[in-house]
Length: 111
Length: 114
Image (cartoon, rainbow over all chains, first blue to last red; front, side, top):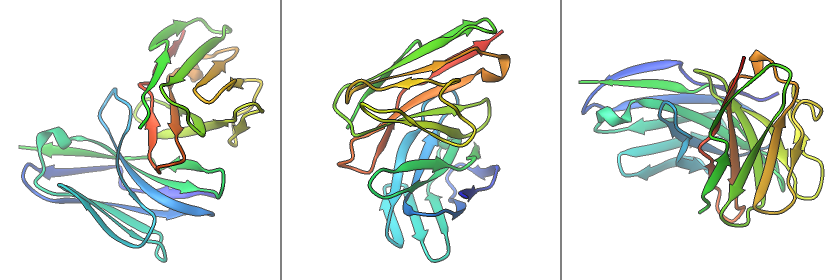
């Protein structure tokens, strides 16, 4: 079966750095996504990792270790607007594919 | 990129009735998907909408309850049949071009069943 685990909630302070972890056990792994979702809105794409290592994009970075079934999303210089749910999702399949989402981590940024 | 629109944006329906949700993409896409997101929870994949053939359903979802059509590369519908209050949820259409890895989401349809 497919299993994706991430913490339910995290709290961090404005201006700080926070790391959201994700572990997965899937068959047919074909990449890992991070999405941001504000309450009442659709998910928006943050990052995609298919190879091991760190991908940096502005204040957000994402890391993948395929051998460990592990990823993290790193958010730097936190802003209040970063308060949202962060969804770890794994793409599985070859040729045709589908994306399976974890339960999401609700991040609260406090002043 | 792809911009996805959904209709209706929200609806309140009576138990036992059916609702069809439309999803329109502004460009041709290879893959289209339907997800459900219940309050406070993450996204659950209902099915992959296949162009010109029957949809591929995930475990726990069946065609009789959630019939899906995809007549072309830019349009799909999801019907929620014989609704019960447990079907109250947000239904999201998603698409991927296959050229880039990014998966795009529509704004969702908020369904309340009374």
